[in-house]
Length: 388
Ligand SMILES: Cc1ncc(C[n+]2csc(CCOP(=O)(O)OP(=O)(O)O)c2C)c(N)n1
Ligand SMILES: [Mg+2]
Image (tube, rainbow, N blue to C red):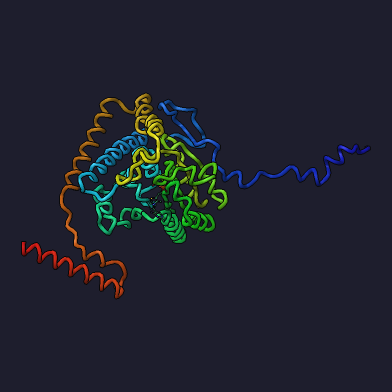
């Protein structure tokens, strides 16, 4: 048989090299579009076998906790105006993320929240007054982290990413299948601790889910000034971490994507990164004036993508919710807010000197001096009150 020049070329090693195996980085990348299971008007989109829809009773509970969460959030903002809270960062508009994420983990898993996650913590079942203790101005986080498997709300940006990696690694090392869920904002993904945490988790296959709520702002800094990455989920690929992006105002999709991410981590496959596209409806905190840096029309556009209304429309159409159930949940939310108001209006008993008790096992000379200074100031103030 004569060999044609084309056949030679086809069989040459050079040609064979062009048939490359799949790029391993490709499997780590998120879908080009955020995963979505409900349209913005609440109608269902075609089902996805990779992200099965959670059962109806779970979605009903998701709705209930989102309604309670929103009511809690409005109440907390009101408490700042009454001087009962020092500061409150609202997560209104982020209910699908806040509640969907905590429903995806077990009580025995660990949650690493930021200051934005008060709603997530009450959805996890932590006493709301305990959740607000830090924001009331106390020196501790209110709840016992080891009892509720929830770290204190973290104000230094991204430090919780390192804590989550360490805890998850430690748990796996001891043979437990605990997953750590680390919340983080879009802005904080520019911080070194995010990169160090995710790199450590990837190398040691620590079971952490990094959940980025991209609410489009870091105080006044918009996303366009924060990153040039096409998606924050792309930040996983450089560390060998699979990732996904999800419509963060679609509660069904958030729960489905987080459920899969948590299963991935629990199965010993290492960390997973999820970016949720959402929006911060309120200012950064009650102390911020968002009208100075963003347009009202932008906020209005996001109002139309309300996650609570979206889920309600869907569940009503499916027959999972009706008028009576919606009214009953609204009533529960009012009662929850009323009890919170009453309890937060009670004057807390605080001992300013306790501030120094747990800083170090053995206080430093500086702390002893500072403690003495505070003690003397308090004594002088009491003496003055006595004179008056
Ligand atoms: C290490 C560190 N740097 C700066 C700050 C001040 N700061 C507090 S919140 C914030 C914006 C964070 O934005 P993002 O991560 O998007 O979270 P969001 O507040 O939107 O939930 C900044 C810069 C801080 N708390 N910690
Ligand atoms: Mg943000």
